[in-house]
Image 1 (cartoon, rainbow, N blue to C red):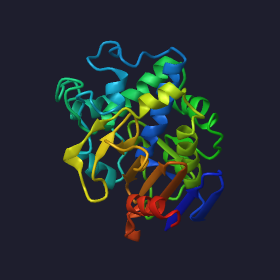
Image 2: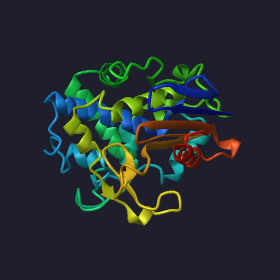
Image 3: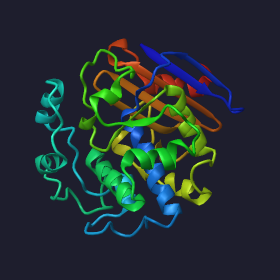
Length: 288
């Protein structure tokens, strides 16, 4: 199963395939980044001051430079997910990854960290005074004028969500939160963000301030970098897709924009399709 979306320069949308909501996986990070940056625009978060009681700043969290570990390398995590067990408590997760032990001095290195974005989610709740689901609705989904996106927190919240061949998944295993919504709304979120509808112009420029990642070079990504909740190019933002990819049990998603066009694709793991490669090809050719 697949879903494809193309949002053109004039805002017209071409869509095909699955129309049901799907898991956005790590595209959720972009939504979290938008929420935290809007809180910065409101003066409730200082991006460059250390988070209270911590050695890292919000910018370092958003750019995966905080020195925090990831839980993706824990065999026990994947074993329990596959077995359909309930998620660990947040405290148990942080103990399992030894989150109190910095992997490097914040800002000095880079390592992709879902734990870092768990800290982002917690910071959003503290700064907004809202539960994460309400904060994302109020500060991201409503301003972006998308209606299907929501935070899934229980298995019941995945009712009606296309999960591929995965049954009984608990969204609590995604510790920074799992947004679900249609692929059309995923594309509209990124399209609105990059057209200036969600954060101040200077904040959007800051969001695209990036760390080059030459160690991750590939044929698809010859010059990769990471901004604030966005995967970008290190040297040429205009001529390289900007957005985010994500994957989890049963499916993958990729949502990217280049110049005035946005493309998104979701596919089940068993389909054999690489959504990121397909989206990049779509942006080059102007069609799927």
